[in-house]
Image (cartoon, rainbow, N blue to C red; front, side, top):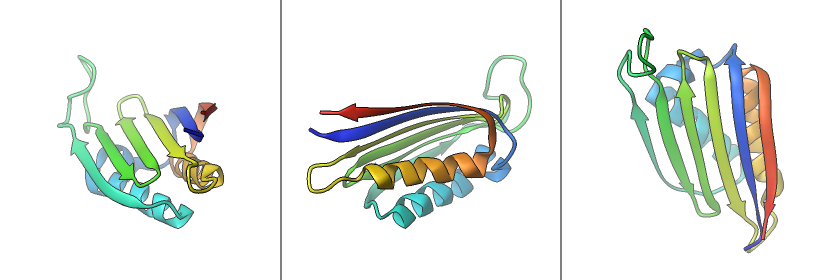
Length: 127
C-alpha cells in the first residue's frame, strides 16, 4: 500500500504547555489539525497520566498519550511534560489519492504549536 509514514521526536518544547499536560487540550489540537488538513477522523482515544507518573523522581503534571484513527490510517502522539518532549507517529495511505501533503501539514502544525528547540523527523515513503 502506497503511503507516507512520518515519525518525529520533539525535544525541549517551549510551547503547547496545555497540550503537554491536558488530555482535552491535546485531543482538541490533534483532531482540529487533522480536520483542517482534510483528513477524516473515524475515532480517537486519549489517556491522561496522573501527576508524577513519569520517570522515578520526577514531579509535576503527568503526560498524555493519544491516538486518532483516520479513514486514511492514524495519528499517535505521546507527551512527556517532565522532559518537555513529544513523539509523533502519523501514517496516511495514498490508496484513493495522495494524502502526503495533508500528513505533512498536520505534523508541521503540531511542531509549530509545541515549538521544540530540536526536531528529529523522518518522512518514510511506504509501499
